[in-house]
Image 1 (cartoon, rainbow, N blue to C red):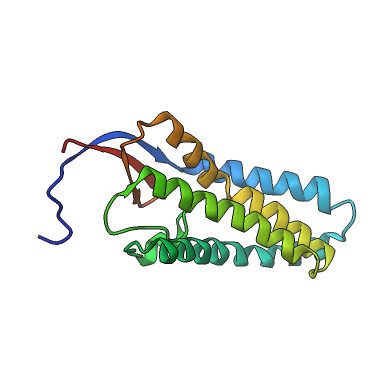
Image 2 (image 1 turned 120 degrees about the vertical axis):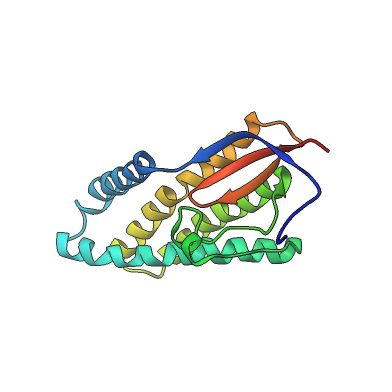
Length: 171
């Protein structure tokens, strides 16, 4: 009986980030680049600057792991979770709502501040792409974070494959 608890949980709601969300992110990224970077940069330079977006999942993952380490929680990462919109965020058991809020706030704020910090040392097209990408990539996390305020304060949160589940214990 691996990973079994003495509690049973009732599903309150589930937040899934599916194709409409991915399309929203792609549209936001394209619109941001067209509005802010294309008038100033060459189109080929802007195309090459998209490579900097590979840094953002790593930043999200490291910030989440940093917060989990400082909070002394157990974590479990599966290889497929590294490619979800939560980039490797996961815990062995459901976590408290306050832990979830603090972890997601750390990742969202840390990601934006990291990209703002790196903007000064990168070429303009790379800096703008990183800044726009960091804002667009935090949309799922920010949406899930905002949804927590509709949940009761004593509920638990479980990271799942492509979704966040809000659970309530009966005990």
